[in-house]
Image 1 (cartoon, rainbow, N blue to C red):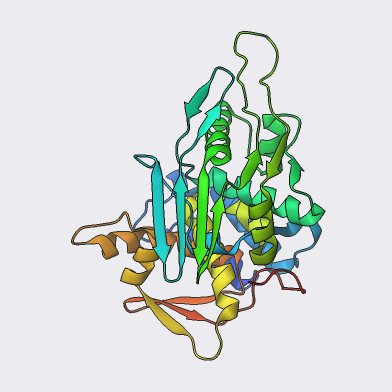
Image 2 (image 1 turned 180 degrees about the vertical axis):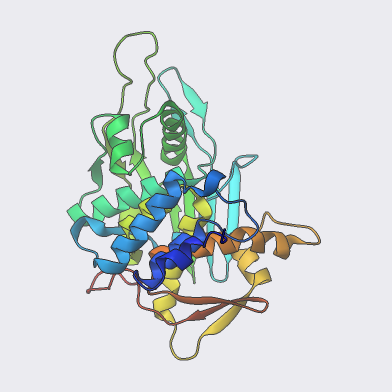
Length: 328
C-alpha cells in the first residue's frame, strides 16, 4: 500500500498557492498531525477562508480596522502578573495599566487585557466607529449577539472570558507612542459593567453600548490600518497569529526597493520579549513559524520567506487596498 499523500500534494495545482499554504499550515513541522489524519474544525475553517480570500476580492463587511501602533506592538498575549504591561519595538511602544470598574457592588480591580478577545473586540469596535463616524457603538442586545458579531460561538467559557476581557479593556489605561506622538488615556470612555445577575431568572445585564473616548477616536481616524475581516476570523484562536497578520498588513506595503531580513533576535524583541534564557530565539522561532504559515495562508499577497537567521520581507500589496483612507 502506498503512503498517504500530504494535503498539499493532494491539492496539487487545482487551487491557489495560498490555499495549499493553508493546508500545510494545519500540520506544521514538529507538531503532531490530527488524530486519524482528519482536519480539525479550525483547520478546515482556515483552508476555507484562504480559498475565499484568494478567489474573492474583499468588499463591504470584509473590511476591518485597527490602530497602527497596535500593528507594531500588540497587547499582551498571556495573563500578566501585576498591574502593568510595557512593550517597545523600534519607535513604537505600548503601555497598558489595569484599572478599576464598578461591577454593581463597588470598585473591582480588573486584570490587564490579554489574548485574542480584546484584539478582536478593539478591531470590531474601531471598525464600526470609523464606518459610522460615531464614538458610540452598539455592541448588540446580548453577549451572545456580540460574540456572534465577532465570529465566535456562545459557549459558557467564551461568556466568562468575554466578560473578563471586556471589563479589563473598558477599565484599562492605554498609552500608544510613536516618533514623538503619544496617545495617553482610556480607549473606552463608557462601558456599563456586565452584571451576571445570577440570583434572578433574567438574562445577564449586558450594557449594549460602548463609547470610545474622544482622544482615542481622533487618534484612530489618523492612524487606522485596514485589515481583511475574513482573515481576522480565521486567525481568531491565536493572539500571536493576529499580531503577525496586523504587523505584516501594516509593514509590507511600505517597503520600497529591495527587501530586507529581520533576524530572530529582532523578531523576538518585537513579538515575544517574555522569551528569555540561552535558547530564547530558538524557542521563539518554534512558535513563530507555524503562526507565520497560517498568516500567509490568509494574506496571499504577502511576499515573506524564511531565510537563514530570520525572515525576508519584500514589498507587497496590503490585504485591503488603500483608497484615500487613513494611512499613517
